[in-house]
Image (cartoon, rainbow over all chains, first blue to last red; front, side, top):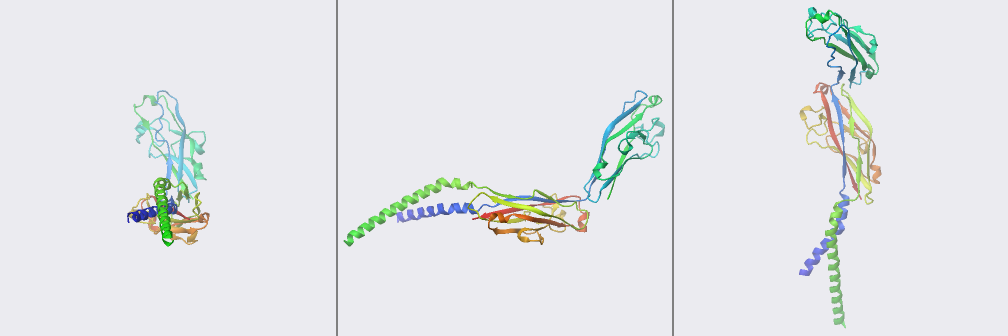
Length: 178
Length: 179
C-alpha cells in the first residue's frame, strides 16, 4: 500500500513535469498601450517681453532696447494667417512715458516712445498711434518677430522733471484669420 | 515449471517497479530543479502599437478620425504558431469614453464613445465600450499584424461647451500567442 501511494505520487510528479512546460508556453500574452487624445477649446497665444527697462535717464540722449521677440501660435487648424499690432492704450498722452505709467499728461516725457521691427523695419516710429508690426502673414509662424525695438529720446528738460519711474504699457494684439 | 515462470514474472514486475520508482524520483528531482528555469521564459513576445493618437482639436460637431495605424506582433518562440489581438479601454467606469485628462471622470467625458475599426472588425467602426477582438488567433502569427487600425471620435455640439482641456483614454492592446 505504501509503495502504491509512493508510485502514485511520483507518477503525478512525472505528469507535472511533462505538462508544466506546455502550460508556461501557452500563457504568454503581451500588451501595449496607446493614448488617444483630443482637446476641446482652441488656444491663441502671443508671447511678448514683459518689461523693457531703459535708462536710468541721466543724460539727454536716446535710450534703446533692441532684439526683442514676439511670438504667436494657435492650435486652431482653421486659422492660417496672423497679423500683429502694438499700441499704447492710454487715451491721453498716447505714446508718451508718464510718471508711474498713469495717464498723467502733466508728468510725461517730452518725446514719444518710438518702436521699430517687423514690418516697420529698422526705422523707429512714434507710438502716439497704433503700429502694425505684421500684416496678415501665412503661415502663422511667419508672424513671429525677433527684432522688435523701442527707443526713448530724453531731452535736457526731461532731466529736471519729477523724479520717478516713467513708463507706459504697450499692448500687442495678434489677429488670426482663416 | 509454471511455478518457476510465476516466480520469474514476479521478479520482473518487482524490478520494473523499482525502475519506475527510479525514473519517477528522477522526474521529481527534475521538476524541483527546472521549475525556476521554466518560470523565466527565455523567449520574447512583443507587440508594437501607436504611442499616441491625436485627434482634433475638437472645434466642430463632427467625427474626427485617424486611420491606417499599424499593430505588429512577434516572438522568437518556435513553439508559438498563432496569435490573436484584442483592444480595450481598461477603465472601470466610462469605459470607451475620452475623459478630461484621461482620468475616470464621468462628469467630464465626451458624449460619444471612441470607435475603433480594422483587423477582423473590418471597415465598420465599433465602440470601445467593450473589449474588441482585432484578430482571432491566426496562423501564422505574422498574419495577426494589422495595418488598417483606425479610431474615430464623434464630437457633439454639447461637447464644444464642455470644460476646456485634453480629453483622452488609454487603449490597451493584448496579443496572445499559442502553439
